Each structure stands twice: as structure tokens, then as C-alpha cells.
Length: 112
Image (cartoon, rainbow, N blue to C red; front, side, top):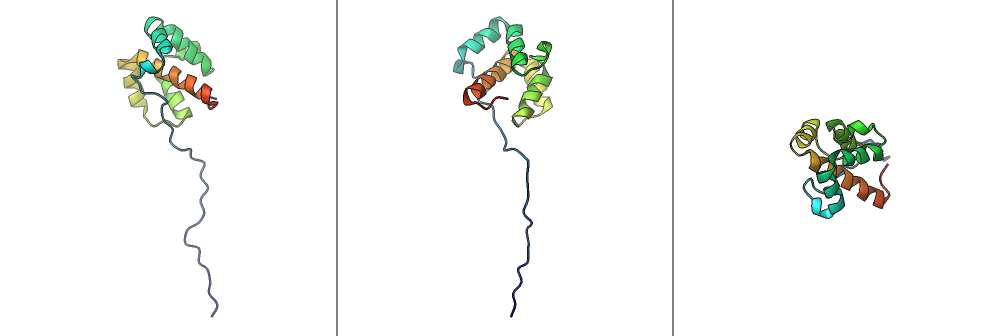
């Protein structure tokens, strides 16, 4: 008797990235005190540095759009609503978290 192989599941090709994560928490200032101090005493300067690192307009460094752009670039879970709430109620922590993440990704060679 001749047996035939029947394909039940087709091979899949996926371009989806694995979910990313933040390198540090939102309130994790002690992991990089320099960034925390810069954000506390010169918030616009830190926003300017973040925007410069991401090759964006310097006026956007502290915005919801910048946080959303960064999060989507590295496939970090979240939503525009959560980005809005974080930048509204804790803007310094938001920019500090992004800058700490940029610094860590640069050290790891994964920042682009």
C-alpha cells in the first residue's frame, strides 16, 4: 500500500519582532543618578538630548509622540493612552526613563 503524506500545517514566515521591554523602570532613578539629576534640574536639556539621540526635532524630546515613537521602535508593550498619562503626570520620570534606556542600548550596541 502506498502511503501519502498530508500537510496539515503550512510553514509560516513571520516578520514580527519579539516583544521588547524597558531597560529600567519608570521610577528607577537610582540606576543612573546623573540622568535623574539632569532631568530634575534641567528638564528641557534632557529632552533636547533625547531628541538628539533619536534624530528628531529638539522640541519633541519631552512629548507623548517621542515616547510612543521610542516604544514602537523597540517593540515595547504599551499604548498611546499610557504614554499620554505618563508624560502628563510624570514628565520628568518619562524623559529620564527614555534617556536611561537609550544609554543602556548604546552600551549593548542595540541602539539605532
